[in-house]
Image 1 (tube, helix red, strand yellow):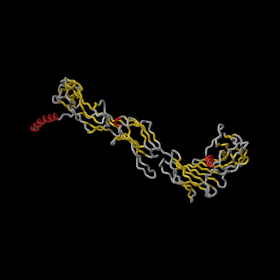
Image 2 (image 1 turned 180 degrees about the horizontal axis):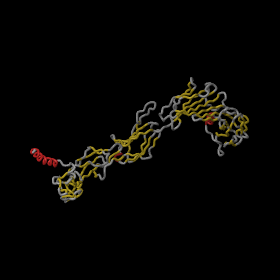
Image 3 (image 1 turned 30 degrees about the horizontal axis):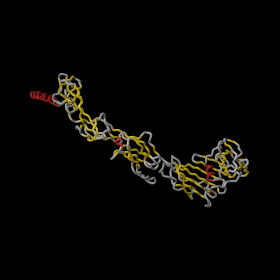
Length: 505
């Protein structure tokens, strides 16, 4: 038992000594019993305390500086209490090293370290599209004040300007966006890309390169040629226009600095335009349907097809049927109405994008293989009782619609021509009522609800439903069209019977 007490008496002072040799790493300095912190005698003798005193009260904050070209490892220390002891909250020393500057967090420093030697040159860079206000910096010392006749130095950073001079950095170094596209100036068409730009670092921008390139490899059937060449940009502002491009194609617009710094990169697709014409339009003899090859989306997304069919009776040259169909993009064939003997046909098909319809592929059919479906002069029904002096002609009209047809309203259109192409255009066009101030070459003279054959006096000067049946002019050639229109969501069908005559003088 006596041996055990002897062991404990020896162990207690050893444990106490061990506790004194391992203080809290965050608390430094010798413990003070007086409730004040004294200037440590074992610290770097070059350290200077401001305010300068022999001891400091609890919670006093002291500014540290160093003599000569040195800086303190920490700028301030504070007198704190720990239990019954009063001591400093850290240790300090004087060093010639500069701390890593607290600038823009996007900056990349080379070498990348926490401290730098005096006059050690550091390279700065930024992410793509940004440039540092200085690319080379280094740490220096300058006199901050004079204390007791001795200079007190502080840490400063200098940067190398465009002329190679080292100047003091008055504020922080930032990553700034060097190249900017002026808002609202970006213009995209089907064949070009245009933008206005500004540069915030003119010295840097003297070597900018601008290019337009295909964003990816092209493949058949929409193969695109690569854009050649590049443009050098100079100054603080300007305009960049890509060379001629292809419609509805993805391009990458890049502004860069050599060797590999990207200032601006933008992926853009040129606008759509009207498509090319379908390669082929033909009649399938087995099905009696018109067929064509589907268009690829090379100049725009194909949203459908416009199919126009004109049929003329070879037995009755005055009968003309014109059909305009709006077909979906998945449709590549359509039955030819009434295909057989006794009719000549002209058909066109056009691809349609959001911009509009493109060029048309043409197919023609003439039963006897002679002539063309588009004669300069067409064969229309004859007209009796033409009166040049009165400016009238009597038209023997018959209803086009047959009972129980829902549409019975017929338009009577007057065209001052015998030209077949113009007459066909009048049949499928949108002629307006006759204007009193001017007399157009084509106009609507009357709207008739025909249910039985009737004789109509054209040029009688009558008015009805907003239309004027004006007198005809002596010496003019005329074609009158009795027109019936049938419309649906997908199609418009125009059936016309033409009457041609001349009003002699």
